[in-house]
Length: 418
Image 1 (cartoon, one colour):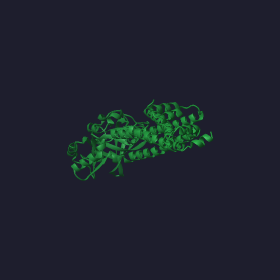
Image 2 (tube, helix red, strand yellow; image 1 turned 90 degrees about the vertical axis):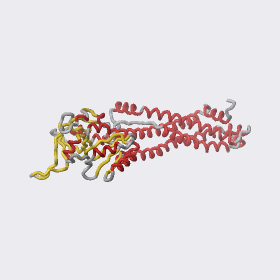
Image 3 (tube, helix red, strand yellow; image 1 turned 45 degrees about the horizontal axis):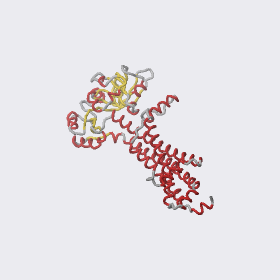
Image 4 (cartoon, rainbow, N blue to C red; image 1 turned 135 degrees about the vertical axis):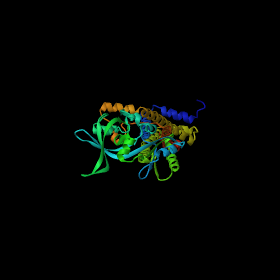
């Protein structure tokens, strides 16, 4: 202890002093305010990080990292183009697809219908570019056989139509057939081969899978396909790799990667994260500035002590260090407590929310609004470090004015009024 400066020893002693109960209570409130503000900020940003990470993972698990499409009638020489795309070292797998819009009509008495995007796939190749085969609630991708006219439906579509594996639905497309009675939509009866659940409401509510050859007959594309779906070794490199593939395949192609297709989702999440950070930082700032009132009261209460220290030869800078130490310790303990509380809540948030939902008998996250029914949280060390450093810096700034006022205390005047 002999090596510790006396300013630090006196500052810690003032912090532990029980002489003024009200002052100790205000110090505790300031500390708790900083801790709660830091914890709330960590939890909110962790939820945003978890939402972004979960959304990206679900999107990439059921959609391709990039697509190469042709204008007009589609790709007729797609096997050769597929081999050229696979030659790129950044491409892991390539699968052809045929896609078009259609209307599904259930064969129940109520005749419910649902607009869907019909995607014709090759089951063997589709498993290489997406994990939708692993998200089957019933049936499997292998149920899609050429000429069998089976269809796999998203869980939301199947629920709306009231069908399950083995039932039949009618698929109608806008391409008409000329008959003596006029132009009528082209229709075909399909057997439901299975139901998948991706966890993404947009996909479960609007996607239906059929075999590529059945889709070719339905949309009359012949041996051609709408395009190629690419899977990358590193999804984050999809923009650059897909451009390289397009240049290799030649002109007349339209390339789209997952960052473009879902740009609005991730841009809105990033913007929301920044806004929430600055808004909730104001909560931390208000809690940090409570330290100002705490130290002002401490300076007022310790006027005689300050006067005696100055009389014994203490410099103004030493008095400033004493009260700066007191405020800094309050800020440090509050910040560390907030970090611990925030990380603990974030790591257990999903279980806490599910427990609260069961207790209240309600659901906080509606998948039709938030795209998922869970509340994921992912703690990033960079965010925790930034929050802790910012909160502690605000606490340190809050100590400067009261400590400066204490350093300007005149000993004679303080002792005269004691």
